[in-house]
Amino acid sequence: MTIKTFQFGEVTFDDSKILFINEGIFGFEDLKKYLLIKDESELFYWLNSVEEPEICFPLVGLRVVDDEFPQVENFEAFGIVKLCKEPINMTVNMKAPVYINQDDKIGYQKIIDNDQYQINYPLFKA
Image (cartoon, rainbow, N blue to C red; front, top):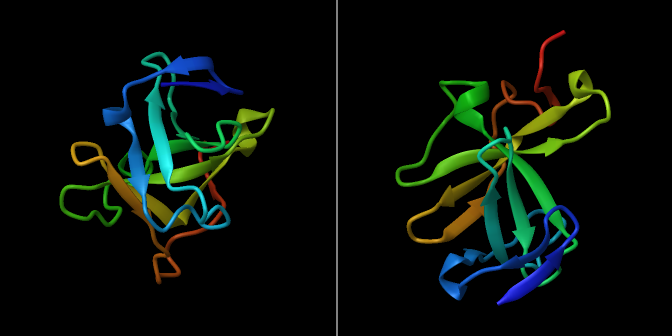
């Protein structure tokens, strides 16, 4: 299968690479199928919709940001990054992580009910 993405151009992949997020991402609940793309030279992962390839979320592993971030067995927690032209202004949503099991190709997003985690946590320190 091939999709045309904004970030990567045409991407060809096997159906076995599709990640299913059954409840969708908040605000995009109708989109259930994604590719998790990682260029080895980049900091970010990219969660690209298969159903609407122009929709793509930059992600960062939350254990990179906070080594004590709550984990779920067999899932890795990712935060959606808000990109900015000035890298110092980039933030990550730690309040609503996306949990992904890359082996089983499933994921979900949930809200962490803890004031310790912010929606716009600075990704880089000044």
